[in-house]
Length: 246
Image (tube, rainbow, N blue to C red; front, side, top):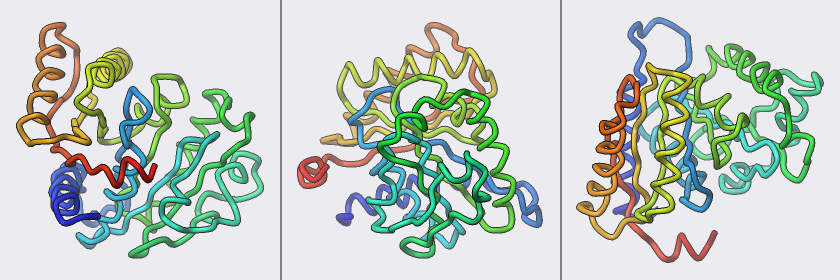
């Protein structure tokens, strides 16, 4: 990460991790953050992986779960080579804690699967089963970042609706933040206490990021969507090198 990217991510990491901080520091229950976005190509996975690194730098025991069960790539971005993936948890061959691979700064990486259509099309009941397994990580991880697929399908909503905090990633493009609004609208329909944090990626200026965030917040207010909270978490500057490397 470049210095400006690293600084902004550390700030966002501090903001979001403070929001999910345990009320009881003795409690072993992990907190979850779903990193999501209505549209593909907004840099969601890049944000999720770098957010995990930034939180680890803050001294947190961090895990990252790749919930894109058909096109997983968190393991590639963190340069780890897992022997087992969530596929082995779904089939009952492994417990979720058994498939953890240690990544940079001790991050616990829980890999999804890639190129397996049946994993991409799992029914909601299987998603719920996976979510039910997360309690097994209570004594191993403080904060679990869940990198969801793009879109607003059940494969996304199952994980988003179960999270303590939601980090909605979008970019300063009308189609992207229109899709982000569609995602927020669906979330509000199913979970009226949802805590949504807006992260604007690939921006030219801080003012541009605040403008996009304000557009989304204004539309949410206009249509009186029932949400626990929607707030601006921050932004990540545009970097052509990152974009061209994807």
